[in-house]
Structure formats: C-alpha cells, structure tokens
Length: 81
Image (cartoon, rainbow, N blue to C red; front, side, top):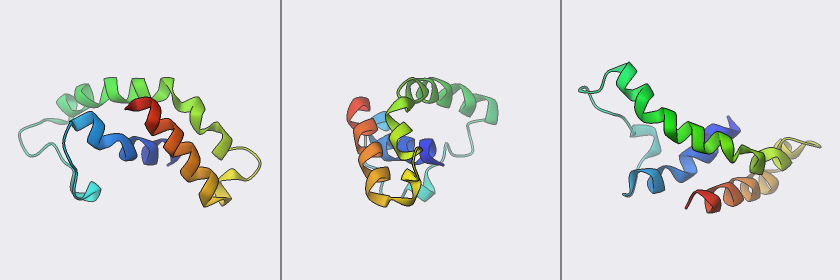
C-alpha cells in the first residue's frame, strides 16, 4: 500500500496532466490488460528503484505516524519530478 500511495502521488507527473480524481483513473475500454501491464511496467520499475526512500516509514512503527509516511512519500515524489 505504501508504494501504491507513492505512485499515486506522482501520477500527474507520469501522465503530464492533472488528475482530478485518482479513484477514476483508467485506460478506458480500448486497452487490454496485457497492454495496461506494458504501460505500467516502466513506471513501476522506476518507482521500485527509488522505493528505498519509503523505508523510514516502514521501520520503528513509522506507518503509525502519518507525518513520517507523508514525509517519505514527499521525498519519493520529489525524486520522480
């Protein structure tokens, strides 16, 4: 969930446009699941390479601290931009 939240935070940067509702993001009906996988793969690869930025939120009860989680996701998203 933490990596998904971090990717969602960066979604506008990946798409190059505003995303008014992250819960309504879709490829539409013209993209197959395998095509969607091909689209997402490079994004996830980049994010996985930077996922160590999220580690402080995973140690010593960090997930219980919304501030620590927010700071980690902010640091992560700054590297993506």
